[in-house]
Length: 357
Image (cartoon, rainbow, N blue to C red; front, side, top):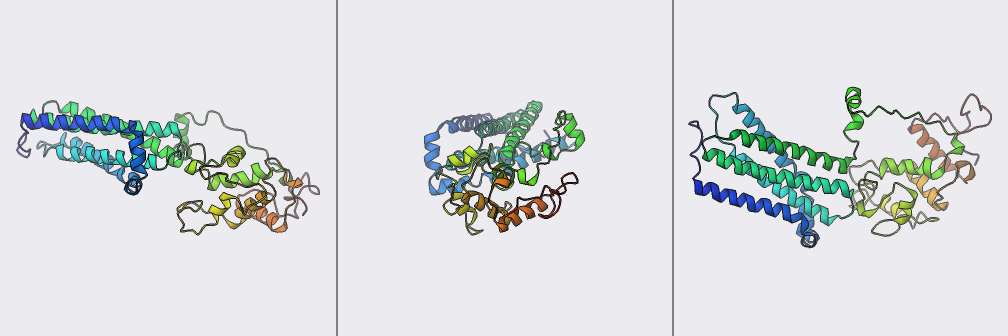
């Protein structure tokens, strides 16, 4: 040991800390199974409040673990090994326990919002991460007691903790941002290495404007851009999915989400038109809001009976809705041209972006 190291702990103190660590690890493993207790606690005012701090709390053990690893890495190049990392790894493990408890409270206060497979995997990787940090602390206690002998085992547990942290973080990010959040922006070399470009999809054929399906080609793209990150396959806020016609009809925990024939009575319109600072507004604060043109199209579709299959040429399109569709097409970069211009050189006199109103 170097002169900078504190006096090694006594054997009895090391045994006491080890037993305490084992007890906390056992509680961490058992806690996810106490669903009734967690459900009751999560719906209490304090439980509901504290659970929302999980996204903030989880960054503390991540940052502290990286700091501990850097400290240990730096010791390899120093003659004076400096002070022990026992204190920092204790705080890292403690913060991981707090983050895990907050995460369980968040999960039980908002049931049914996330993909169950991803959520379950994220939870148990978080449990493994926390238990490994506790194991790292206990190992460090005994390494210090032994005067530094066996430090390689401590480093091994630290690296295992980092792997578990990466897995838990990846699944957490996938739940929040989608499974393709990292890979969709990857450079070509990375995508090729991951085998993501092996099967390139064939470019979609342009559908003549009047032949487009009202729901599939006009309404659903709006939901996909503005709603499905919270109401899709991987996350179902309020137990509501909006990524298919059947899901829209099924609704969520508040009942039906749409009322065919009445935009006024449709719950999604009620939520969209709430004040921007309202907690229940859709999309929530921080997400791109639905534009006036998008809202006009959705309302028209609902008031028209919310048909699942209807070509634009077969629909009665009010002038203001036709203009909104044309503006949305222009904003999306679709080369449809203005309503009174030819859609292509081949059908110069036949096709127009919208059916005649």
